[in-house]
Image (cartoon, rainbow, N blue to C red):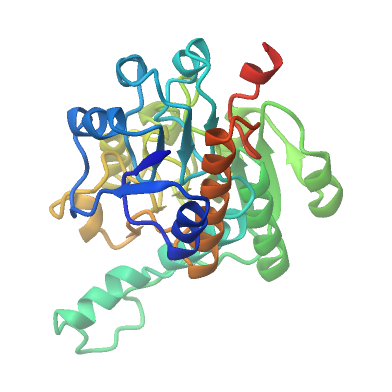
Length: 326
């Protein structure tokens, strides 16, 4: 058996794969694969372990319908055409449950960085512009006692709420397809309409999946309904916000600030106006970037891969319906 791995993954996962007697072909160039390359390498293998963003659409899947399993080194699977995978009976696995805490840490970090203009002021020091104290200059805003709005209160949103309530006694409101009774009980969280979420949030943190339903949700219309003093945080997927509309909202004082760990597109261009804004803080998609989390993701991805190659049910399938269909 042979697997193609699209990026270098932590050694702990690689060792699991090789110890299982699986031959590895690993992409080691410091650039993304184009789809033709992904297809070419995948055709030489029995399985694909996809790390980073690779477009696993219907065209790819039909070109590589021989694959016994596709294992993702990620929680998100918006880059995979699940309907096409189902039609071909290809199991797809992801790595849930291991990055909720670290991603919430990044959302919390961005909230604080934006509220105190931390990245912008650090850059002022780097440019030699820290020269004179002015009592009315470089002022931030305080978070304590403010209202945290969560769009998509799942595991990561729960961890964000836990941090905000514990550290700053914030009130939690949220908008979900389904109520989160655990958060309501533990944090007195209030389930509200999307319009109420926009109007009442002092900090609005996005923790939902990217789908046709959520793509572009935070656009000019959404930002116009938010408080002029509000902070927008996105650590989910860049496609959930319209970046041009976000830039316009910040430049015109429609909202106060924004913190992003995900951008649209990724990577962000170095000349993006957001990088120079006082009230913006941008990170290069590092939500899961801890040694512990990336090791855990590699272990789960390897376990999914090995199970699929052995004809067994994946421990963490995103399309379990292929098993139910027989």
